[in-house]
Image 1 (cartoon, each protein chain N blue to C red):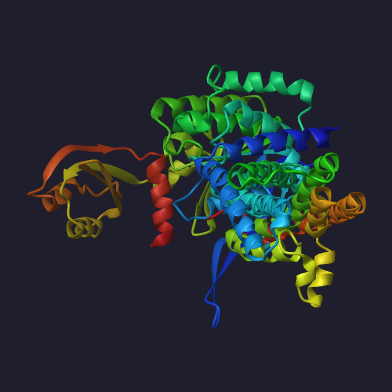
Image 2 (image 1 turned 180 degrees about the vertical axis):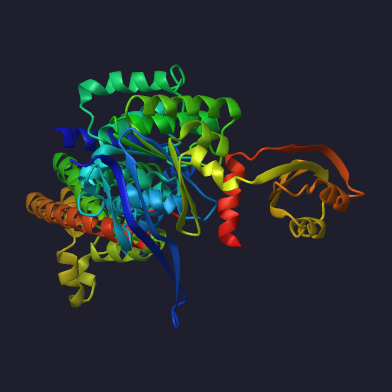
Length: 256
Length: 326
């Protein structure tokens, strides 16, 4: 119960922190418009105007991922700058439990991005969010956010160790978009990418959301996403305790 | 059960930094070189030293934020490397400056969040936070965002955060840095009250008067090594046999300062700029009156107050640290 309370209050506090920055607010307003526009023109150029809903949903998924990867990396980096990373580490709780709320909060921010992208798509391009399984869409999106959040936790361990975590975020943003089939179908990617795609929770989360929007069996993808997310959480918790020790040994928790 | 709250034995810490990719150069800096001391339960222990002496590194090894590269340390008998969680339950850490708080959250939200991180039972949180806000005089301001707080208010919030879980050992790393004199006095009173109620406090500070007033014992650290350890009275003996001359000057050149340092009988000299005034402090052996020769060297320079006095803890500190450099 105490763990749930820590996660709940931690998520609320980190969400408050993230949603009060001018940069984050401006990014949250502008990025969905850019992504919705990009996705629409991409599919129009590909002569697939019938897939506009897919485009809007794909753009929303990209928004969630960007939010998680930059939110988690940025949040850890910001905490290093403001000296609170050391305060989190020095608390007698496992570091994974202190960092998990950061990634959940970024996922919640991502939910807004999805809603905003769909909203802008409707307003600017007339893409009506007419989903095949509207109720399952409401299940698939949170499952996808959990998947992305847990993957974010796994990555956050790297951010704790490295002082230049932002560089890692930049490197990972586009490959994960592509490998997870958020916007471009996995079938157009080379075969050797399939095994990598199959082990990413983001792939199954994105598939679940696309299936809920455009038709298909949603539950198997949701189940696969949650199972891989649980594995990511376990690996993330182990990694976090390892990198905490490494960071204490290499003195990278603080800037100086 | 150990009698000591803190035990440090031969603590060492080396920092390694790497530059370049193709031909990487590894640079090693030995920040702490085998520091040993013990702090009794309920003692208020001061760690003094110049910038870069290794004070913060020592504190960070004791509070589990850094792993020592040599030696070992225990908090209430628990090893800081092997029993990290047990150590963290017993310690609080407060550092000076603007960092260490969530600026976009209110003071109350900061305390609520850290109360969760420290596992304070929900039914106790409200009362404990209320008590601490009262203690640090922030009641009524707790719902304002920290980004609007003054330096003194932030520092008081830091103290409240550090005390949330009633730590047995409190590490205070230059808590009064940049704080106005009134806030610093309140801070000293709070620290003294904590020690009086049985909390062990390890304090680093640049302010000798603060250390003299508060600390039961003081360790002076310079260039990563422990140079002296004792009560403030014992440390003052390091300046025995000396007298101190203070001169306020305007426009004292480096060359003249160097000349004064080399005068017969002068042991140490420091020059501190305070706005437009330069405060020249000259320590000399008691049986040589250096005042006439110092004033002769300052001929042609506008002078303010000139006074001779007995050595203080600060003079003893300068003697210890400068003695190490010479």
